[in-house]
Image (cartoon, rainbow, N blue to C red; front, side, top):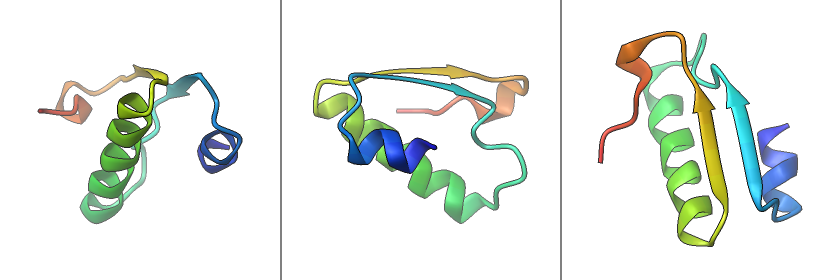
Length: 57
């Protein structure tokens, strides 16, 4: 779903626990993808249950 929204150039992404069950490499790649979406003008809202999932930087 995230990929579809990004390919359609969504202006708003709301993601509920997007990092659950992902390995560290995939989490880093997804964080980079979210950063690029923000740089392109999208708003990204992450709903996280685990404080350690909060992106830094």
